[in-house]
Image (cartoon, rainbow over all chains, first blue to last red):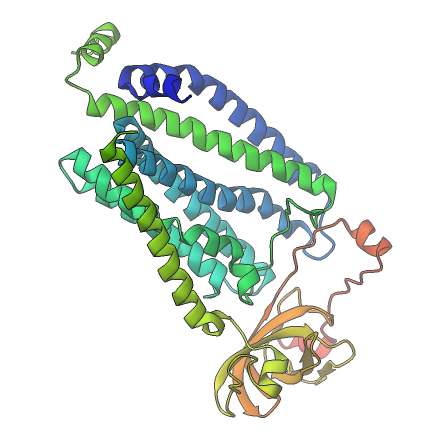
Length: 248
Length: 161
């Protein structure tokens, strides 16, 4: 049933497939983030309590939710790489890690900038903020573990184990605002019931969340291709590719 | 799936399961210590699971709703006094001597950090406003009967800074 998928474990096919997908992801990401941001920042109505300050939500929430999704994608890749020993999966995990770290950082910074005018403080050690900070450190740990071994098979194994262990943090982030009392408010966007946000604010937010996902996908594809080339420099197909590009 | 993959799959799954078990036990043991603040009921009656009450002189945070109509403001300084309650009926008096955050209103959720000077009275050094997860345009809020009046500082207070 999954046999067709196995052929994409081959580095050359993975490289070509991600080259084909890249323009789609990039174009859609620009379109979605463009529409979502302009709609959200310029046309969505002001909030009854927070006025215009709430508009940072259109960056903060997409970054925060995608920081968790990117982690799940990275951990899934690492899991596949670990169990099935598929190197392409390891490379994909290594490609996602720095992107996830940057998105987590954006979520923390925009959150702090939002917290100052609304709550009255940049930072508070409540469960949601602390667990999101732990997520940043997990990303940094995965990045540095992967970077600190000369042997990339070993590096991917070490980083992969850390990535898989860190998955436990994801439900903690998600439910931190429900399990414990915190300064951070509970989730606005709900899947099972009606979201507690007016639709004319909710649509641009959802568009931006989707756009951030596509953007992370696009940057991952770029980094994944670079990782494949770096790990396969001695292969004939890479040499041919380099020759065709005119690289000495 | 060959034998080696099966073994690795079992190992990786056991790893996830083990870590999940450890983390849940740890969080269960820490449980109420991970709360950012005491609710007013917990200050008055003690925590639900352990019955521990914060002692007078202890530095704590209290979180709850500002009771409507409880706000007493000193006309000549920034000193304010208000009550904070929760849905279980506990109520704590908070005194504060500094500027309140923009979102502070009666009926608003807040988190105040300070020293418990006597049972049920907190001298706050920091008051943070909590906002809820609801976002809506002002017209909708008005239609739903949500008040959103901001606090006004009197002329004496404005002149002082």
